[in-house]
Length: 66
Image 1 (cartoon, rainbow, N blue to C red):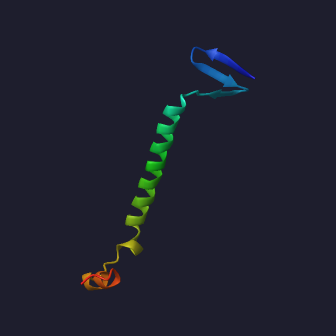
Image 2: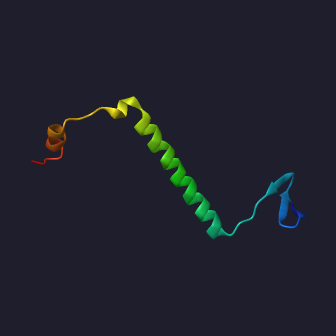
């Protein structure tokens, strides 16, 4: 059962909860997704295995460029 504890504060059981408009929650979800992508990108570029250099001629050959 939900009850209002203070102005703008609600508890369900013993847990305090936050109620947001769906539009605001979508913005938060999007920011969290972007942050997760940022963290994955930073881990990938900081991994020494991902820092090997490939000669330009090999890149061109793989991409079928002349």
